[in-house]
Image (cartoon, rainbow, N blue to C red; front, side, top):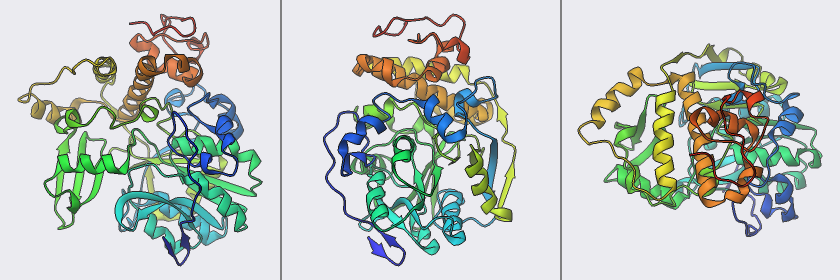
Length: 423
């Protein structure tokens, strides 16, 4: 892909790895940097949070145990939504504004493959107007950080990166080695990724004409929204999705064991979980505040809301995940009950920030249970203390004695290394 202000440089082949999302580091000149950069080896979130934000997360501050360090948390929308944007276009507009202001000379991000609108292609964008080609959602793995070397070779010392958590963790781990004059990191949350090919299979389960689907979004109101080429739309309640028809390897272990849903090392996280129909911003540090100011009066913001209780939903998720991780069949809801619960959940289930807290706790539970099954020897290094604190109220034990100080249950089991969690 090439054009005015946008380029997709060629990359080296990826070095073979075990747990890997192909963030791009293994394609750099020195693939051994994976050892220092990878989130799936021995992540050190307290150190990197302090380096990036000036302090690590503080569990005594509201919501930081769940969402990481932040200065502001907002519900937000662009007053003039951008055509082709997944929501209103805040993420790509931030990058446009950085290029317009001359704060950066290049943006490292994703654009759609010319032959497959769902497949992500890493691109270097150097002109503001070229960011329009990067709007929307892609599904699949793409080596974003492999762009660091061609960006450096082209003389770019002031860059912005739009990335998902595994990419941003590796970027921050290597940041001091890059010799940059300025780095702005716009993060998007990420729950579960899969290959583009498997995503196409998922689309075939949703529609008899999957090639006509132009938009897909998992919304915070417990529905998936589909848009079609003819302008029609469809909403599917979560409970009526064909998840049971997906292969067991649809989501890889990397995604099922990821501990950073909210992209805590970004300067600003732009998502939707706590937005209640709008976008959800976590402004994490001074650079994040600078980014938000760039939007000026183009954006409308308000305080996020919260409603409902998450504990029951998380406990139900835990039990189903425990059965799935152990190879047992899921306890499926009767078909006649699904429409009723699907109607009730947006009205009485966790909403707003409570929905976001529930989703973060579910991801924490998922990480513990799937690593326990597949890679128990990696649990001690891969699961940070704050994740153990999140799962402690649900009866999952922890390796570290620091969990209680981070807000975990007083009765959380203090485990010895390499033992399965308390059942």
